[in-house]
Length: 278
Image (cartoon, rainbow, N blue to C red):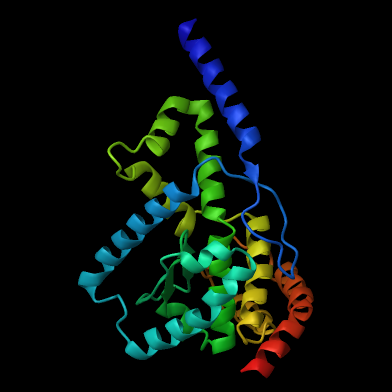
């Protein structure tokens, strides 16, 4: 009876918290992203866990010589990031104060990601296998940065914690919210890693990142229409076998290209304005 009551109290507490946890993380921008989000975990905790997980990835890859192996590739990627990052203020001004990091990982995998708080990794596979242009690379990086701006990782981590109600509410909450003496819990760090570069984003997350990404690229002076060419290349690459990591769980090629065509045209004036200022 006591165990049942504890479960009821825990579920009621989580339900009450959930009602207060719905908010939005970004301004609408020109593309009009305004969905309210379920955010049960604090942004500070997620950012701290992401920073720890990012360092873990680098420490694993460094001894193998896989971090920033080609100086020209690193310079190219960081130059694009340098133009994209100032544009993030359109969606959220606090992003300018994030501790951004940008590194290139040597891997045949066609992939890139941005952890919460601005921790970016671009794989050499996406640079080399599709002979990516700067405009297309800006589309990829803008897309991944948008996941971080929109806090999709935090949103999914919150959903995982909420899902823990059915199994062990106390365990799930303690693992994430009670890290101990100022330390990030290994549970939360692991969850952040999983939701950033292992588990699939939902279709709505991908669509939001696509739309915000073309706006970031356009404002940075990169042709937003390159996103269309990029996903056409990715679709062609996936036709020969297993899809690239970036495509394996994303919307269908046709739906994505249709949506990107509409929204790249919507932000085209921003691109033209940025070109004039250059």
